[in-house]
Image 1 (cartoon, rainbow, N blue to C red):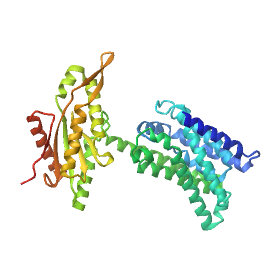
Image 2: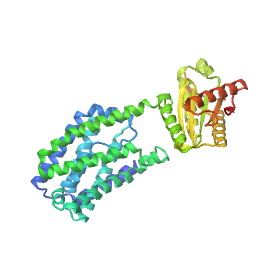
Image 3: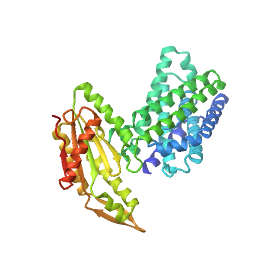
Image 4: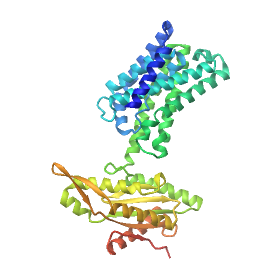
Length: 401
């Protein structure tokens, strides 16, 4: 909240400094065109946007950059402030108001970040000696380089300004800087914004030609996010078996190509049926989620992939792992689960449950198997041996004869 207020004060100061007292008629026409098309695009894609927000972990990336970045290139920065305020107010009221994960202060913060990065981009345009997009079209290579520089500044500043919000998500590189798809989407909207500005520099009517690609990009983003969602297990947040299998096969192909090793763990929660029988299935789901989180915390960061194999079974693939490395991770997971306490729903309240354990079977490529399927079979046999030996232990699969 404090960061949001700081961004807001900075925006007000910049707006008072830069706002044109007498905007030209052409500037006002461009403002009306960009605001009108931005609102129309948001209305036509409203249901897509709501679905996208429910799936997306990156609410700072919006299609509105198609219009706001065009404004940076063709209008005074004061009018870009007005345009951004109008578009984000409309987004907040029409697309996000039902989404509890997008509170009003976050919408305000996103708008402020866009305005601040736009101010930086506009300053870059001035420093390059290119006052407008119309001028850039007559300056050849210099004008084109200036526009690309402005795009880079807008992209970079926006990424820096949202770092405090991303820091709350986690400390992995993906949490800090976003995924590959998030950044490509951000760049794609800026590219469309540049095309928008070029169309406006020639004739406002040509902006309509940019409209269909924007709608298509919007829907394509949703499809990609739905595909990503299908690769996740909804109860635990780790990979579904299909998503994990695809990832493990890529690890296998890389290991085969580079003559490298990798490991595989099969993990089964001991006596899980007692949890369901004693406390109910909602409590069982809470335990599964806690176990999955414990496994994720105790693998080697983003390199290793955790999946739910089915029921109370989980699988882990560990790229470039030696035999000792596999054993260390497996033992770390077993210990973490044994020390775990879980708050579960019971009746109208909650209860703390502890005393969990897992049995773990491990297998190493290529000594225990030459394919993911073979390693799963080997790890499953080792897991059965761990169960037979008394549970709450790790057993490594024997090397093939």
